[in-house]
Length: 251
Image 1 (tube, rainbow, N blue to C red):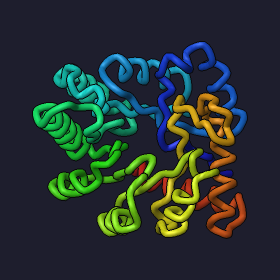
Image 2: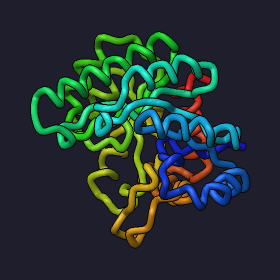
Image 3: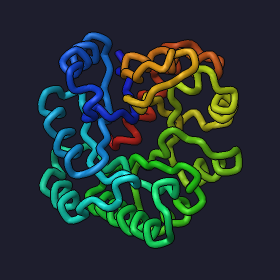
Image 4: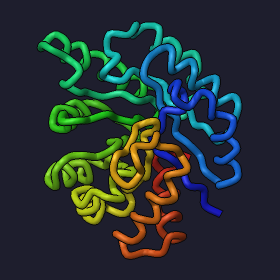
C-alpha cells in the first residue's frame, strides 16, 4: 500500500502543539507521512523532538528567509550534529517581502547558500521557499550539485515551471489547488514525475476551507483534486506521487 506524504508542513508550529498527539494518531491510521520543515533554531529543535515521537515524521531543519537574522552557526551545527537523523534541509529560500533593503536580501542569499552547501555536503534534499524570487533561485541553484530539490507551493508562471522541469526540480501543490484555476493549469503542465502534494499547515485557506488551519488530513482532498485534473484514478495518482516522494527523499 502506498503512503500519502505531505511534502511540506510545519508540525513544530505552536498552532499544532495541543493537537499533536491526535495528528500523529491520524497519520498512523490514514497511512500518511509528513516532511516536517523548520523555520529557525528553535523550531528545528522542536522538529527533532516531534520526529522522536513518530517514525512518520520526516524532519527537515533549516532557516526560513523570514528568519534570516537567526544564528546561522547554531542551525548549521544542529544540522551537522543530527545529519544521520534528518531527512532534509528546509524550509530555506529567498523572499524580498521580508526585507526592507539590499543588505537584508544579501543576508537571505548568504543564509540560503550556506544551507544549500550543507545539503550538497550531506546529500540531503531541500525544501525551498521561492515567493517572487524564482529567477534568483534558479541562478543560485546552478552552482550546486543537489539531490532532491523541491520548490514548495509553486507559484511561478508557465515559463518558470518549464525551467523548474528543465533543471530537475520537484514542485508541490496544496489546498489552494482545490479552488485556484491558475494552480490547476500549472499542475496540468507539470511533468508527472515531478509532482508532489503538500498542505503547508498551519497556513489558513479562506475559500472552501472556511479559513481553517490546514491540517495534514486535508491532503487526501488535495490528491483527489489532483487526480481529477490529471484525468487519473485516485489510487493511480497516489502511486505516482509516492514514487516521486521517495525519489525526492532519495530512498
